[in-house]
Length: 99
Image (cartoon, rainbow, N blue to C red):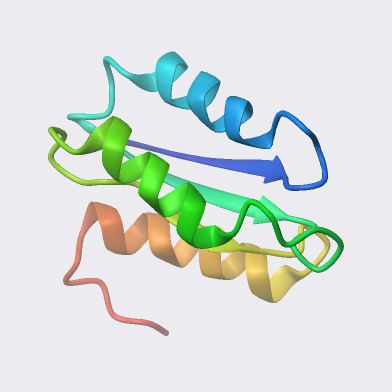
């Protein structure tokens, strides 16, 4: 099993297209891989909302084993990046407990 993470800049006009491209790039791996998506700059532009990204993930990955998780993150924040990594570990093995 493999794991991947990805950050998308919400300020970009094509942020949702970036998500679509990401999903297309990993489409053949999503049954075996776990993907966590971080959305940056939500504080500067809150549309599309996290719920919009979640809906797109559900639409695009509904038939997959696990729909990727999506988080609002600050790419400069160690705490937020640790949260993404924890999400990856939990997606891979839900029995993992936080340290």
